[in-house]
Length: 283
Image (cartoon, rainbow, N blue to C red; front, side):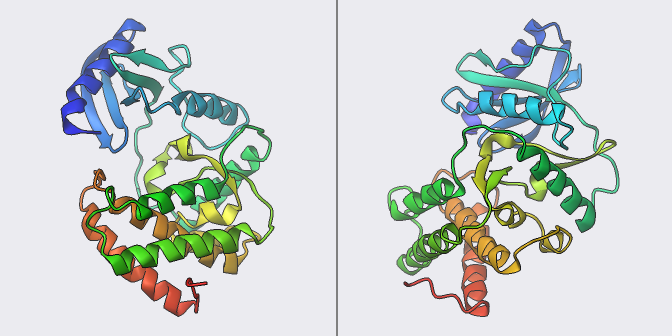
């Protein structure tokens, strides 16, 4: 979120929670990316705030409710207020349960894989309209092709990213394997370590695809503990996901700290991975 928007977003979250009968004297910023995540005190609510144009909040709220009801390891909405999306002063606000982090923060690969497997099992039981993973790849392709949005990307790197995204999107999409509802980005930043075990957050990136696409966002060791994984497909998905997140880092509007440095490092990793796996992305 733009720095100039943060005070207004915080005020919108605090006033929304107060209007719903919660006691709010302070707000602590926990995370700031495309949306702002706040801990509201003393009521101890997790508030997520995004500009009103960012309208996937309703989908995320409804999906989270259904997954929690089916026993899936996902963070729940705050039970003290009516579940929903609250609009105030140009922002949408959702209110979630705040989970106190527990030590150790280090998550074992087996536990990570087990939680993700349980999430996938629950997601197979839910029928909701979602984009296919290839739609998200296409967004990255459009970003790479748009020189106005990625002005600092060198021509050779632009070609590398464009070729990799196009080639692997086609190869993976044509495999014809089983596809299902996925989290979309179950990386460690979207996993909470709580007294209730591991819980996934941030469901706005849900899409349909092979489970290997989700596993590609997790640490490599996690894939070794998830049953029935197609390791060749997982290797391809890892390179594809790396190319996608590298593309985001070159967006002139990217707000990730050290994003450009990471983008440069990841370009080198993509080249190494393509060489190591003998993949030709020029076809």
